[in-house]
Image 1 (tube, rainbow, N blue to C red):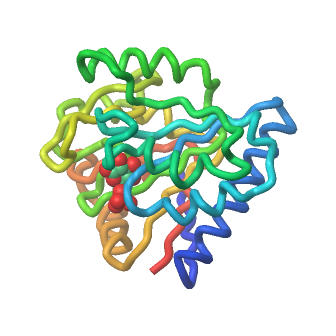
Image 2: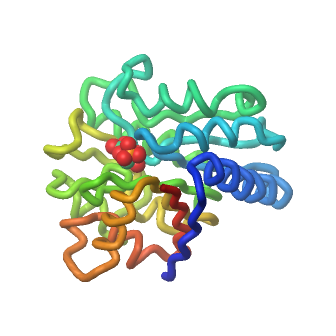
Amino acid sequence: MASTLHSFASAADLAGSLADTVADRLSAAIAARGAASIAVSGGSTPKAFFQALSTRDIAWDKVTITLVDERFVPADNTRSNHLLVDANLLQGKAKAARFVPLYQPAASVEEAARLATKKSAEIGIPFDVVILGMGGDGHTASFFPGGSNLAEALDASTPRGVITMEAEGAGEPRLTFTFSSLQDAGLLVLHIEGEGKKDVLAKAEGSGDEAEMPIRAVLRRATSPVEIYWAP
Ligand SMILES: O=C1O[C@H](COP(=O)(O)O)[C@@H](O)[C@H](O)[C@H]1O
């Protein structure tokens, strides 16, 4: 499916515009079905976007928010994506939204993935909005090069749900939605910032193995168009 690059003069401009676009999409879903869903990424990039989105005037009590991926750490850990969402998105008007965490206080990450799959199945499919990020190694969600379950995660026939991932560049074991869960979102966004990430994107858009740069799976095989939001 095709991708479209939306470039902005600054990260603040990007955050405001993406917040408007996402808010419009969530409002349209609420008008059509009475509910809306969004899966967001963690990392360092989405903070300003989260803060902007939390101020938008939509029926937040009808919105379910979850994460594209998470570390197997509790929500009070400074590396938790849940903590980032709590501090920056689940604020102000957006406090009324329902949040479905991927981390579960289970004995193993595999058990946590099973529980997260069960809980997230109640959200409704496909997601109205998915916001992906991308690491300098070409990973997206927790689809890491060399990841323990990478082939299964990227296989379009793997069922929707959450699986585990361990990889050298990932730090803690991870929980991640599978490719099949994310690729057909009503609005599928890849949010990246900085010249370095633009170079990584250009490399990913070239030829090469998906396993080397898993973002290629999204760029090449997502059934929804990929809206790429970039700022310097
Ligand atoms: O590990 C992760 O990294 C990516 C990219 O993060 P960034 O700090 O380079 O913006 C992120 O999309 C993913 O959700 C996160 O778990």
